[in-house]
View (cartoon, protein in one colour):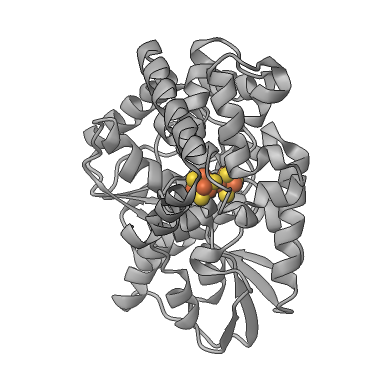
Length: 389
Ligand code: SF4
Ligand code: SF4
């Protein structure tokens, strides 16, 4: 961290005295003014980011897709500064606060360890408080408050088993085949498994879009159901559900008693315990790292699973691991900024297709929806298709 900050300190040190004084005056004035208003946004972070030379912007997939400096990481912080200060307003500026896929690519390069997604979350909370939420964003909240899931529910159970499979909104409504593959795997390994009677969304869209009261309602309800069940483990195919249950709920003081794991970790454990074995596959695959596994959770067992299937060759895309590129579906972009989300998906597809592999593999249902063309497997589908029956 010290080394990462060195260039900032050097740059500030080299500023002419008058500029240094002006920057400091702004900083102090900003802090004083905003702290008093009791706003949710972190003005200290906004000011630091807004005055940064946008060091991370070359890696922001939203900027790359929209080619508009206003949606660059520091660009959004600059707009946020003026929005919070009531210097600017209106739909265009407000909508820019949602031009972020929460991919955390900026954080990989930031000397302050900022994720602009986190900075914007506070700004969005203020937008909610001030009742200035754009219609497309409001519609996501309304749908969740009405149906408790985005899309339609397809999987039901009794919630009575050692392992609960939590499918999540995307699998329920768009990617049922991934849920079915996971159920096949549970059957194959003889797991005592079940699904909830009526799954509610983990709440991430509400959290990310700044609807904190609504998010807490979802979190408390989900935690109560899990904690009152006899489940020892919750398995999720969606990396975001894992992140929310293991990081965001605890931050809010909401604890889940069963352990929570991503499907890739569960499957690898089953392979290591000798409960899954594979027949030979003659094929090449390129693995697309979902942002949340690679950057937020920093744990993805999918490559080890693929390597344990005899005959499969893994090809690595130019951007992989923590340098992965967002598929475009993060941060509710597909509903809030559809064209940008589609452009981001097209760009990522090109990078993956350049590897000329027989199939693309990933471990996130949203990535599959965004990037599907030709042969595409979720890790659970690849395992279900390759395991010896
Ligand atoms: S996120 Fe960090 S590196 Fe990127 S513009 Fe903001 S302060 Fe600079
Ligand atoms: S989180 Fe991703 S999309 Fe959002 S500003 Fe950072 S790099 Fe851009």
